[in-house]
Amino acid sequence: MARAAATLAPEKGTSLWADAWRRLKRNRLALGGAVLLGLVAVVCFVVPVVLGLDSETTDPANSFHPPDAHYPFGTDNVGRDYLARVLVGGQTSLLIGVAATLASVLIGVFYGSLAGYYGGKVDEVMMRIVDFLYAIPYMFLVILITLQFSKEARGNPLPIFFALGMVQWLTMARIVRGEVLTLKNREFVLAARTVGAGDLRIIFRHILPNILGVVVVYATLTVPAVIILESFLSFLGLGVKLSWGVLVSEGVGVVNPIESHAWLLLLPSLFLALTLFSLNFLGDGLRDALDPRTRR
Amino acid sequence: MSVSEAILEVDALRVHFHVPRGVVRAVDGVSLALRKGETLGLVGESGCGKSTVARAIVALVPTTSGDIRFRGESLIGLSRGRMRPLRRHLQMVFQDPYASLNPRMTIASTIAEPMRIHATVAPGDLDERVCEIMELVGLDPSMRRRYPHEFSGGQRQRIGLARALALEPDVILLDEPVSALDVSVQAQVLNLLEDLKARLGLTYLLIAHHLAVVRHMSERVAVMYLGRIVELADREPLYTEPIHPYTEALMSAIPVPDPVVEAERKRIPIEGEVPSPTATITGCPFRSRCPQAFERCEVEAPELEEHRPGHLAACHLPDAD
Image (cartoon, rainbow over all chains, first blue to last red; front, side, top):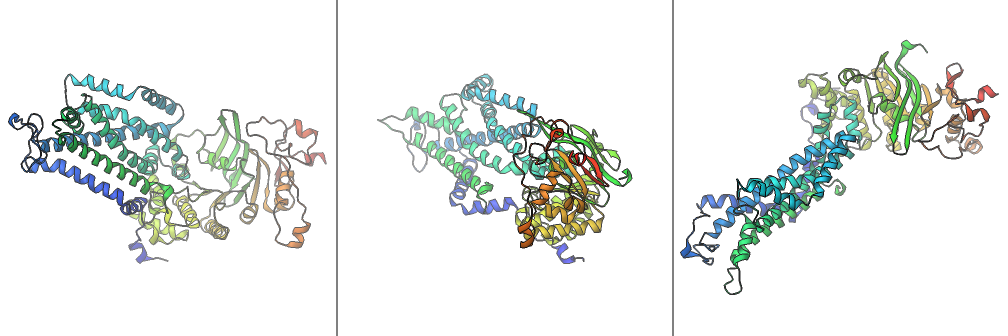
């Protein structure tokens, strides 16, 4: 019996992704985080271009100008427009956060899925290397890498991003490896193998789509960790030329009880805190939405 | 049994796993032959190695020694490339319908995947073929864009069956196909399996621990204990006149749906525990729990021999009588 009509118009099912998206939309805190994050990103990247803001030109006559109509965020110790500095600094912070996280996801997923999928000796060797890198104090590693690069590229965000990515992928690799290890013996993977699927097909079609949720959640929580690390390095004077961390560090330097110049510390801190809050709420929301245990 | 009618032969199959505490002899010298068009039931308690036999046949676990022949051609030691075309004809249905479907794939992609891999169907005809197969297993093709979590256990098992049928196999290994389903759904799936077998000329290896299911479905039955086949015979002789004390005890455990007969039914309890899977066994593997064991059982392991025409058992008792 031919069901011609039914064949033409199959009912669309709801994928687990669509399901997760629906749950995320119901989570106000996570949604608010996503909106706020988007807002911060748009402001940081669009406003300086639209208003033609200049974050570098000094004007010593106008130093420590408090916020007013002309300088909404005031000026710093050498009279640079602080609005421009906060926004352009935000660009660096966000970029480093996203780029280092992307690098850690790419390396971590690749490394972790190889170790988990092939198992045995391969897994043993690969994970001992991770353990070894873990054992090195990561701050030491980051400082070493940064110093190594800083001769040629002082203040360039690339070495920082490289150093942070180098550190962050370790945890990602461990998470992915553990997930792959449990998934590769699930019956649907065995079933794929009995119908003749090769390793690549099994990894890309059957295993990776099923760990993507965990990866997305962990990545969302890695971005704020990276931004904090970058701020910390910049605070120590090892970071980039201009980022929220740098501004906070400089702000701390000029704030004093007599002439507070509080805006120099408060404004970049506020942006940093807002971004970290949003990312953490979004990450938590994603975890709740994608966690199979909370399903239905 | 002549070799020509056997479509799948397993010969002295051994599958040993190395674990920190020693060697687990999951399958230790199993030989059986599947005749074209039959259903061979494989029964035994949990951990006796029945699923491992099936997994070794489809190369999901490596074979330690022995031979597996499909249509007279050995499957052991074949490269992946050589194995792939043969695999088409040898498919498997898994026990747990909740774990055996990829939750991120629509059921249409799950059913189409084998045909994509083997390129048996032109890409343009895939969708139509998927619909055909879904109708064959009693699923509504309009649901093919849905995901596994939107289906019930029985429907999921039908999807698993559809995936196995996609390559038009000759032999399907059914690994506890209904044990994870509600009793009311079990009968539907079993009837579907029987119906498909008749329509498509399939051969089944039915692995189950449910004796009534096996009796209902199989022409012949093999009983496994501790990685070995202890008895192999046509269904009725095996159920009514078992030779091996283990089979006898298993059969006596089947409840009878007649209160009078049930009350008078003689039950043979099996005492003791299954020996540790890593233990080295001398003599008959069942002797530690056998109510009728005698001296010979301690020193000599019984071979699977024909005690009545077509009725094989691995036991010293018939010789002792």
